[in-house]
Length: 229
Picture 1 (cartoon, helix red, strand yellow):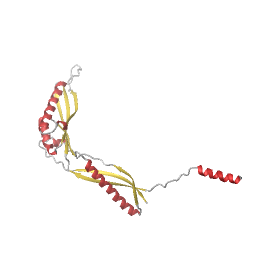
Picture 2: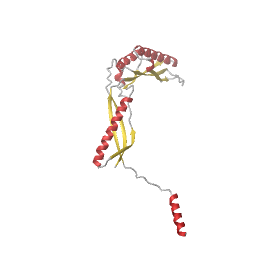
Picture 3: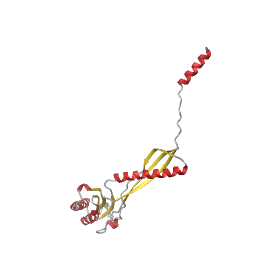
Picture 4: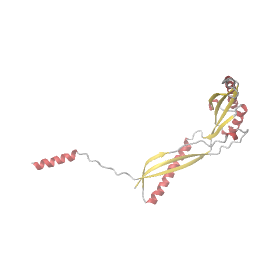
């Protein structure tokens, strides 16, 4: 009777105890891939600035406002839509010179500064837009860049090519190491898109500058982790 109870107790204990099955940690290969897709830019952005000096703050602001109005109208006459022109960076500061008498601190003049960013849907208008803005009163050139209105399709094409590049590298490494590739466990996308280079401002300030948009390289980078056996 005692033996039967002992066996029964042991059986009950085993049935009620959790049994943990430890899965073997998979062996993984980490590999990266990269691909670039060349595209001709279809959009540009040019940035201008105006700086006007006045005896009073109101004079400087009024002068800058009138100059900006003239630039906007001239660019609109060139065919650039108002929605593609945005002003920003309005600032006003006093100008002092030496020789103040009796400790009086009164500015001798004021300087008003304003920036304008213009999107060029037609990049052939880059040169004419620069000439037009300078002729209308812009006295500072802050940059010119080229890009894609929609970089999505080119980036997706580059991503697909980057994955193929990573898999090709993985096959080479697996063959050299004598292992077999399994399923992909993780994919990390490290892609980014940057606009094209910007010409130097002093070059762009020249009248009738020939503008060359060139090509853009849309680059994608991916990291894969693949099972190996």
